[in-house]
Image (cartoon, rainbow, N blue to C red; front, side, top):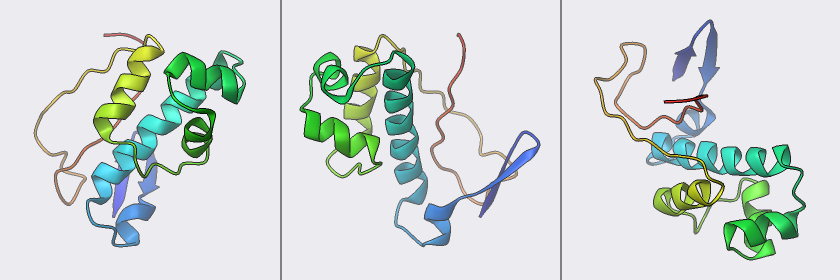
Length: 111
């Protein structure tokens, strides 16, 4: 399924692969990406990032390589909080451009 994001159309690989709960999986991957991006923005090495997050370096390496098995959405949200990033969950009607309701992650500059 293709999801329109602004002028860009994103073809969601997870849905095309027929993964069960593809939108939830995409949300966890996106959360992990934001964690790694923030650590990179701060110039943290893997060991330093792991210490800030309170996880092992091998677990951080898994996140950095988008291997999210063992990372629930709740756990990823807590890791974002440890980076002093606020996570806000909003609920609303399904966008008309999507085939089914799901979960989406969006980075915002402020609330």
